[in-house]
Image (cartoon, rainbow, N blue to C red; front, top):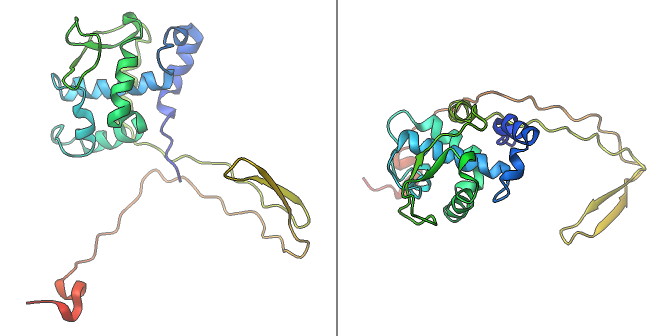
Length: 215
């Protein structure tokens, strides 16, 4: 089952469209705008004064964001998705800086800087637009990323004609043989809010290498 990584920003996106704010964010897609701000919210709250480039290192576990941040880091990693990748992150940050200042919650620490470079630091600046953003970002860090439930299709009946798209985008058709028995409706998978991992069994050198084990 896939994770529902975009639901957290749905309310913000709807309000931005309803108020016409989204039209002013043409420097980057509105969904990317909120993902960038989510990453900057984390950095300015828990790693103030650090360059924006450290985010990837923190998400990968090479740098610590402080004790007790494992859950928030996991939620941040999932909800930011490809936006947090090293190359994408800098591109998106530069696009973010092109959005009008009054719409942004964050700005470059150096007011004379024109582009984001490896040592660039962001700081909070505040904005009266979409004032609930900070609470939404905090909830996105704290709340677990739910699994996404997808509508399952019923199996094609015997004798029917079906089609599918090949990798080269060409369309192929086939006919389900009449002799195939109806398999019935597929069992629905229920979304679980959490999972329990079994402890890893103890491993000994003998178990790994058998007769080759050297004592």
